[in-house]
Image 1 (cartoon, rainbow, N blue to C red):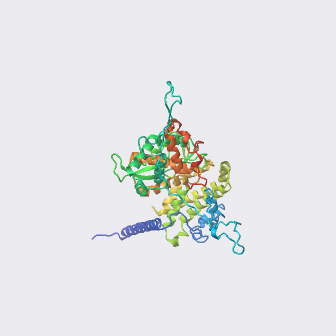
Image 2: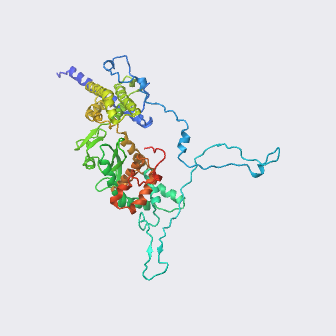
Image 3: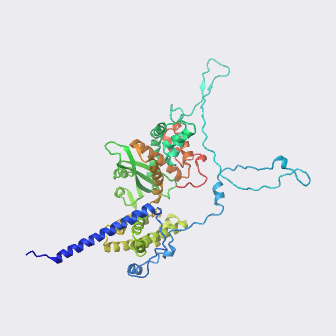
Length: 522
């Protein structure tokens, strides 16, 4: 007779059911989060009036008992807020442009006073409306005429002297002017307009310029000018004491021994807001390994804001500063992976409230326009205790969290694991709570990537990195990208490479025509 241990079998079945329930819960979280990412607004904003922390019930009794008074009440932590419209904003926006007055007068045969027959004269004016008008691009042929000079008396010893003609941007190109190449580059890298669309637009204006020719011009400019200019930009960036870094994907079709579908990367380095002059550097890399960061930061000594990616760790001379915005993102996603009725009382909501409280305190410091030294003092007094409380809470909840691989568990683990790097923000008042500066620099590249999809070769990817570096650096210094590119393409053929530092965006040689009179959105 076979003896069956029903107790053991029951325990196994019970354990199996619990495992299945955990998997189902995890899958539900992933479905809710996927739906949110696909259909919900992209902004990581929520209505905190809807998700205020419960003062009753068992879930938060412990944390409420240990709560810090520095954590603002939920109604003060408005994440969604409205900015008041400035009076006269439209007039302010138009003030930088020239004004052309169109005077609407009466026809001459109507300028007669009906009662007495005398002539009518102007006695007042009323501006009925103001419009912003635009003149489409005007294409013209520019001829450079070299003048030869000889002696007026035609003496025997005189030799003809020719005037000096500026060097062309691209020798023997026929029609490639600095302004035309600057327009092509600006359209592609600033406006995210691929060159095949530019080819069609030029054709509609009566200009037959192939996409292959435009691509050749951009590559020539990179190989003969911009790659040398990038060395000066890199030298300036590495000389700074505070930097931001991040990376994003790209695709290169023709790379040796790699499939066309293989992911490649753009590493991006950005100066901190505390730097006198702003700069951004895009660096192409076929992989996401530590090789590229180690090469970029080989001679760097200072603070480096990054996310939690390990490749930036362990570089000699680099002090890594973590990003609280990434921490907040984990809790935000954990919150959105829950059903609406479970969000309010969740630990994900509590973690999000901690992050928002810290950013609110930081905004208050910024609004007070504190010096960097004063900001460090105020952070130590008010922000650091709240951060320490947050990490203590996260460590406690992680130890009690039984939901393995859940979105909340990931958020708690990330918080605890990154603590040492996140707390580095309190070492210096110039440091920031987030890595948003470099993420903002990456955004135009991500938008462009949706339009042009891929680079053909590694050389093309490096050329794109150079153009994005120059354009994002120009924008960061409030320069108009097209005007600055045009200035570079006019000057570089006639400037020795060793003097390219005189063409950097903050140089006194940059003309006023490159400078925007209104702030450029970074």
